[in-house]
Structures are given as C-alpha cells and as structure tokens.
Image 1: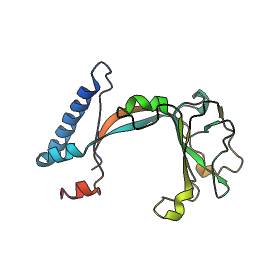
Image 2: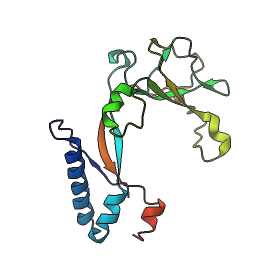
Image 3: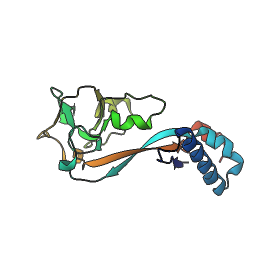
Image 4: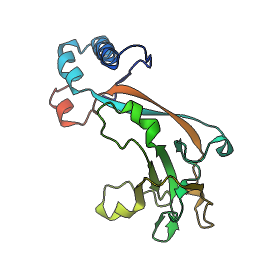
Length: 187
C-alpha cells in the first residue's frame, strides 16, 4: 500500500489527540481510494513510525555528533572506520538518539548515544543472501567523546554519500502491499 499519514507537530495538542487525528485522516484517504469497506482493518494495521527528512547543507555546517545522513561519521575516540573485506564502508546515517527520543513515545529506542549505519556500496549487496551479511554494519555507541573522522584513502567513490541535515516527525504507516495482513484483504 505504501500509505502514510503524518502526525501534526503542534506540541500544544496532546500526543493522543494528534494520533487520533492522524488515524481519522488515514481513514479519509482510505475512503477516497474507494476502500471504505476495509477502513477499520487498514487503520488497525497502521503503525506509528518515525520519518526522517533530509536537507542538504555542506558538511562544514553540521556540528560534530549531530544526526545526519551521509557525509563523514563522527566516531568515538578509538573506534576504527568500519570495513567490509578490507574496504572502508560508507556512512548511510548517524543518528543522535536524543534527537530521535521525542518521536519514540513507546520508549523502544535508547534515549542517548549515537546509532551509525554503514554500507559497502561498491558491491551493492541487498542482503537477501546470508553471504551478504558483512556488507553493512549497524553500530551503537554511548561514548560522548567524538571526533569528525578522516575518510580513509581506500574509501570507494560509490561509498561517499553527500551529507544531509535531518529532522524527524511521526507518522502512521501502513504495511507494504506484500505483507501477509494486506494480502489477506484481497485488494
């Protein structure tokens, strides 16, 4: 389905009311698509998610330790740049968990620390084969002593992603069309 509905960011309205308003908006979208007969089931499948938005500044404009997509990671002292088979991996994202925490009302994520996502982009492994397991790394660090790392000389051009500032918001998201629950609705 791929349908999502953003929650209002108006902090003066209680979260529960904003969530209910987003559910009603999703119900309206479902009705507009001619699927009103399935609205209850579809709204029931919607999950609260965190959307990441990007805005492209220059890397120099980004403070050390901020949340960002791409660019050069801000690594804790002593942490080596991740590699795959001896080849440096590209930074997909660096998320400062204190930036994400306000959008995690269920408290499922750490409140502090940094979460890094690295990928080996030269081979473009998708992860469908268990042999692909080393082509990405997710690293969590609670170490607050950070330094903007120097990209290693062997970092492939394909793994050098442009830095983007990020912001977060909540939204209700329906599962994809191939999810068992959606398939069972026989759309």
